Amino acid sequence: MRFAHITYTLSVLAMLASRGGAQDPKDFAKLGQSGPEHECLHALVGTWTLTTDGGTGKGSAEFKKIFGGRFVTEEVKLPLGGITLEWLGVYGYDRQKKKFTAFWVDNLDTSTESGEGDMDVAGKVLTLKGQHMDPRTGKPEPFVWRITREGDAKIVIEMLGVDRAGKEPTIMTVRGEKVK
Image (cartoon, one colour):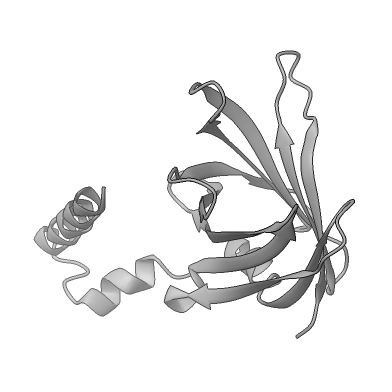
């Protein structure tokens, strides 16, 4: 996967150079600058205290901008039923797809998850959809991951399934308050 991405990037650079433009890597970087869609993600940047609905412990999240604001990373530690759930997420906006994108890994298994979706017009609700392998059945199952900003200092992260009727039952709800 990484090799394919590097090959693609080098191919794009070669194509741009052959057209007489963007020969300098700085020119290429300008084409990929963050834009207004990325600004919506930047509102998440900071340190957050997290709780789960029905849970008793507090966790934490750290959101950071990387690569000139093109992406935002999310590192989470959250107590959950006697264990500490940890996950790492990377959020971005793909200008070619015209979609928000995300990629996640966690400490509960060895699979990766990715999703893509849209932000509401107010820039407050990011809804991402994807599929993951259900460890119980070994089959792909759809999911919805929704982050809702409730003002500047509160977020709600909803992890939802998708049933056969297309309804989205809640798997887990995480609430966050910004510390800094």
